[in-house]
Length: 292
Ligand code: 5RP
Image 1 (cartoon, rainbow, N blue to C red):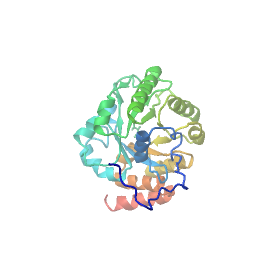
Image 2 (tube, helix red, strand yellow):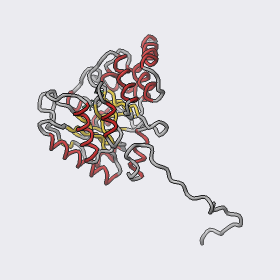
Image 3 (cartoon, protein in one colour):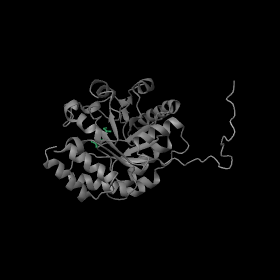
Image 4 (tube, rainbow, N blue to C red):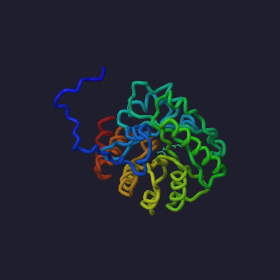
């Protein structure tokens, strides 16, 4: 039996159903599941994210700061918007009760002892679904020895992700022989976006970074790169956000800091609180001096 119609039921006939543009650049035409996952990675209030990157072990082994993820990294996880890691660390160390979104490293192959651009897709989409991840991440080596393979690998991951609603983060990896400048990163990020990545990770450059974010039609997050003094790292995050980045995906400058918790909170203050690098640095020092 259909539900009986009561007198006075209100169908708001005069109120058109409203639709909203999705808050992330270039993402409006994506399907619901993909948008929902992106909305967990990027805060819908400001369109930004603080990703904690701890996936380095997939080619570097137990690098400095990641010797014991259970001891040194797990306490930081509640401070991050998103955790980027490998499936091995996720399954062995990260408790399933962690509810922040996970971006999973889905490429691999060579270690630091070999040619790094010689990567393959190293994870099935089926396992990504099993793990409930919010995005996959894959390295793209523009100008590298195995450039084409890495680009095609990315497109394969994008195709698989589109099938199941899982976004792909393309990570622009720069070989030692290549110049890290805005011209290079415009090229690399744009190729990744043109070939379907839903968002792109790249490095910050002092000159012309705003042209990199402007010419990339999907959101850009920056990697932190090699460890630098804390104030410098905070200035870099601040400048990147001001010049159009949608967040950071930071690793070494957090977990190799003498106060990883202090750096997490300071980076958060910049990305989500629009704090100046100097004020964020004060916060870092206060937390560091308190012994955290
Ligand atoms: C490793 C990665 C890292 O996640 C990325 O480089 C971010 O880490 P860091 O801030 O240490 O550079 O993609 O290949």
